[in-house]
Image (cartoon, rainbow, N blue to C red; front, side, top):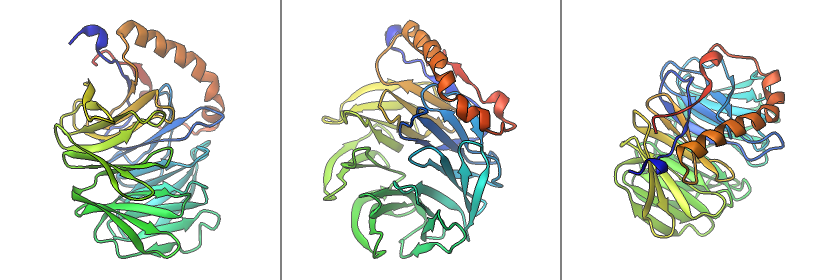
Length: 348
């Protein structure tokens, strides 16, 4: 490969175990942010500046693997779902735990409603729970009849609908929040390991085995289905133009595809273990990947050579210092802080 076209990612260290979930906040007045979750004995979600990868803080309080993480629309609160049978609500400015929601088994997925008033959770119990964050001590609303252990959850249609997929069953189920009933099932052959609602609300992107599919989020029809070169655990659609998507999985690479044709138009190498999660930043200028190797890598969307990437990184870091100053000032620095800094990678 021509060296000038080798992508050089920002490599974010800090997690001691595999990174299994990533979530970008929307753009806020303070910039945008990236939260990450890690399984194993690393029970601390981490918050970073989404643009530079700079570590901001660590959320400490879980006693087991963290499988899922999310930020609310304003990036003021974070949520996480854990193997310690809890979902926790955090203050994203200070790192303080605001509430712990008890479950009867492992929590695999969590998501804030768009209006930020509710937290949706799912896990091994096969029950979807909706917690009212204005009344955190009140019992949650429970939506039962999931056919299996819940792997992913998301909100859509201005919080009128929720979706879920299962660990051992194919398909994505769409639930009417008002009635608690399944209104549609998006059929897949294999369990859906990743389900993302596009930023404009038009598409649902799913990954199941060696297939990435795009569904009409309003009429639920299958729009496109592409076969992948290997098992892909995660996929994400570029949010600004919708003209490309990324996928990552067992071959350790981040593949970039043309949305309209399915043709592979890029491939980024650098991880040293399978890729568990990929997500585009809210403006589409970069995307992040989390891997079994314990690192997060942030890749620029445009093709750049090494010189361009290095100058880009140093310039952005300078600008970002003021942007996140308020968040950093108030955040309780966790014990992983000193090792969780961004570095420029040279192993792209």
